[in-house]
Length: 106
Image 1 (cartoon, rainbow, N blue to C red):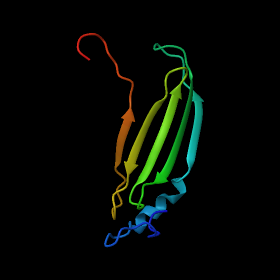
Image 2: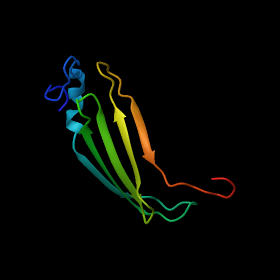
Image 3: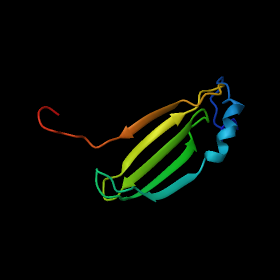
Image 4: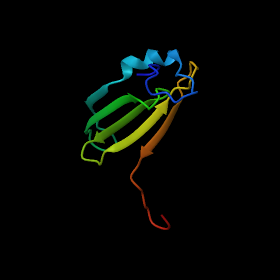
């Protein structure tokens, strides 16, 4: 968990105690629902699983998720957040997307 000091490099300050307020989020979350019919097509089931863990050292909370819309391939991503010592929670999203080729140069 953030701030326990068990995996800190020598001379590196420990993570901010402010990060501890996010400890209840560290677990796996699953959501299931169904989209609505629209001009884009019929509604489909949606399943999303997200796991939140502390990055080594406890300075960042890492969110890894996978979302599936109907029979489409899963969408996956990772986001990192939390600035040491601050009250801000910035989010950096790294997302895997299917390549799209519509003719011409890819």
